[in-house]
Length: 248
Ligand SMILES: Cc1cc2nc3c(=O)[nH]c(=O)nc-3n(C[C@H](O)[C@H](O)[C@H](O)COP(=O)(O)OP(=O)(O)OC[C@H]3O[C@@H](n4cnc5c(N)ncnc54)[C@H](O)[C@@H]3O)c2cc1C
Image 1 (cartoon, rainbow, N blue to C red):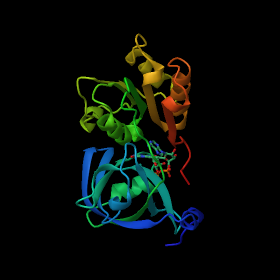
Image 2 (image 1 turned 45 degrees about the vertical axis):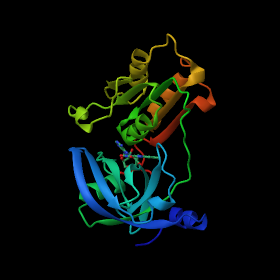
Image 3 (image 1 turned 120 degrees about the vertical axis):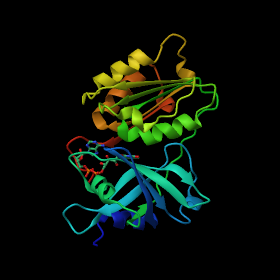
Image 4 (image 1 turned 30 degrees about the horizontal axis):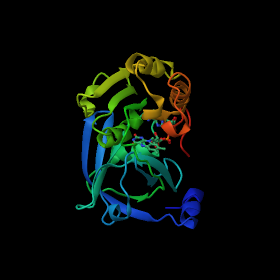
């Protein structure tokens, strides 16, 4: 399989690729698949923290080369040398979604580390988490890492009837709201406005994290800066994918 320029650049930067092998495939919904991977030694070099993701190298759909896509590390078990990746099996498909659709026990691929670090303020009073379904794996890591005293507001855009089957962890301090598909991002922002109470909201003790399709992320970022008054260090909004564009 030919390597592409991205792979060359990453190699020149010292980014190491690790082999992985599929050890389990589970469909949480017909359109959302969890794949457990064995990657001996990989987690030993990884400082696991909320939202951590890896680059997954998969074959391109048409050309004889591999391409990389970002996926969030789910349920890492360093002792067993295993972790999972959750795939949205989207249409139109792409190399990563296709790889996931065809994956079975024994399927192999490669992954690479990504440099990153996110730590939540232990004094956090309000945690706001928003995005589309690609952000769900990272949102779950943030819910698990949040201080127990923080109020957590989760707003996710998705219209599937069986979206509740994904099993989002919730405690007494978690408020979960869904917003139906609206590519402009306005629907997600409306749902945030209905969900997060502004009374008593302290922007100095709040944090907003958002990810997903670019337009949604832009709308949430503007809401965070504007109505919620969150400064640069009190929010992180990341484009995960762009409608109509393959990640390359
Ligand atoms: C840091 C990071 C972490 C991520 N974590 C996850 C994760 O845990 N789980 C996950 O599923 N995704 C995650 N993503 C998003 C994922 O990398 C992209 O959706 C990626 O484009 C999928 O690659 P592909 O090869 O399947 O499709 P591509 O070749 O990139 O795209 C093919 C077509 O599908 C469309 N498309 C891409 N993604 C979607 C989607 N989700 N829904 C509808 N249409 C889409 C594109 O617009 C394009 O038209 C993450 C992205 C980043 C940057």
